[in-house]
Image 1 (tube, one colour):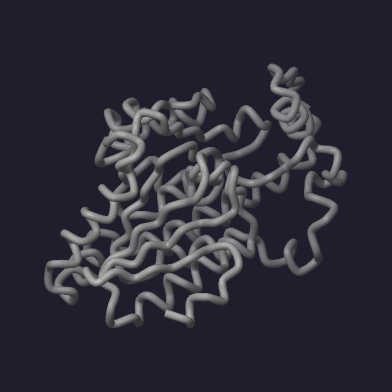
Image 2 (cartoon, helix red, strand yellow):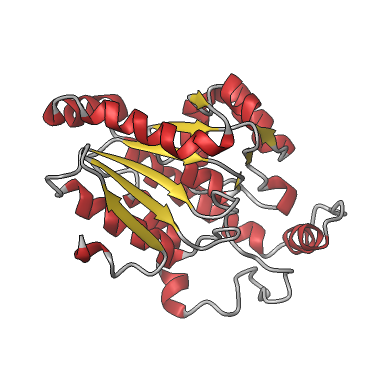
Length: 269
């Protein structure tokens, strides 16, 4: 599997039961950036053509699944709300362009969500077809608490997974939901002790991989339909509004408040 050794932020292991385990390795918080999302997309593309792989487990090292984007304390944000450290190329090719790729692969994906999946990290957790989690996990679409608009296609994926009312509850409140609550509302599909999350996800993936591979991929395509295109349309809309809201005082206040662990003082400006 030497062809998978070149990825800086993720590792790939393929077991004898046709299951590939793709691990994000940016602990402790596993913040994402365009490069991490690109690497995951590249690996998914490679695994789609891998004869020894029929199902994928997406997991993460450390205590957190993915804490979303790293905005720091807000001091590195420019007047437009973008990080000053971003290159022109990164601004031109937003990570959502790469994110859409994650919804377009052929193989079924099981998410092992052992810790917090926050903001865009929740968006990444919605890429898998099914999710295994534990009571210690936390799920939060905390965008409005940052003075921001939901992104990463969550306006489509979260709504389809848990319904409009539950999605609205998550979006409007920015509340953190425990693993049991996520399981109860259908955001997670399997609930196990924390130390069993990955093994349970791998067992579920192996059960899927026992079935006829062509039948699985065709059935998955029928079930997901044009999901990638719907996510593409959603992220185009989400990004347009996020770009506008990044330039507001509320966004800067939201980031500063999060960094200081205090209640934000929004003014609607």
